[in-house]
Image (cartoon, rainbow, N blue to C red):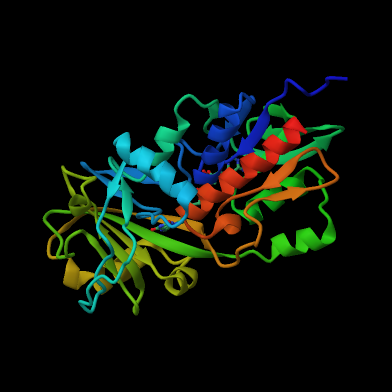
Length: 332
Ligand SMILES: Cc1cc2nc3c(=O)[nH]c(=O)nc-3n(C[C@H](O)[C@H](O)[C@H](O)COP(=O)(O)OP(=O)(O)OC[C@H]3O[C@@H](n4cnc5c(N)ncnc54)[C@H](O)[C@@H]3O)c2cc1C
């Protein structure tokens, strides 16, 4: 009768939503296993080493509006995990920052926060789940390498189109209205150019620049940001339009076009560059619930920034909401 009671709650995704939920569930003494295909935790809160430097190439900073999230951020600040990175950034026309909210960054890089959240959690990295199926009262996940994971509940925090693919691969059907609502969720793509320069950039302090026209949406000087003390690395994010248009374009052409558009801010030789393709950068549609519980199945919850709001704070709030739902189900 207790079949499945010792199985963990499975969470796909060690990004902000998955880790936030995992912490709360673990704190309530529930067994949790987080699975992620990446080599490290963080998902779109991503940092890469390039040359002698470091580049935040996904999320650049976060803001705080919600009181629950503010409390967590205060704890992270106290623990030396995050710090303030100014109160907004100038735009390329020289307009001064108009930000009313502080911008926060990870102290070492954006991955400082997910690394901190991951401490003490049961996480399997480099584990790409390829199908999710329902077996009587539990979930069975299959990985690319042929492993299986059994769980009494499942939290999906991968970008929604990817979560739907996993359910489809395991022949799990969702109620038609919910499936249609989830299928409507689209994400903007983002081509990111990661660069190392021989000298300092012309990006003004504190190191970020917003663009309202042209192919570039955002540039950041990671040296000025304080996360790349040994090399002048610059992150360039293309606009969604440019990214869509040049998704298949040769990387050398993409890099040349973005560097040409950025030339005014870059006065030294490029030593190294890489392109990263974010297919699911930020959701265009946000579901009104912070986390979505599916009925008629073993507990299945959808969460992530498409539910809580298209930013780091939204992903965290969605993770908290998902944990609350699962706690209520497990204790019910
Ligand atoms: C270029 C860019 C710039 C951004 N800038 C900002 C910013 O400045 N400020 C801000 O607040 N937000 C920003 N964002 C958005 C922010 O990064 C996201 O809202 C937030 O990180 C989403 O967290 P999440 O947990 O919902 O999803 P994710 O971080 O995407 O986590 C999902 C995880 O699921 C894993 N996964 C997916 N499929 C599988 C599978 N089949 N098997 C195993 N694991 C799987 C992925 O590897 C990933 O780690 C930016 C995003 C991008 C890409």
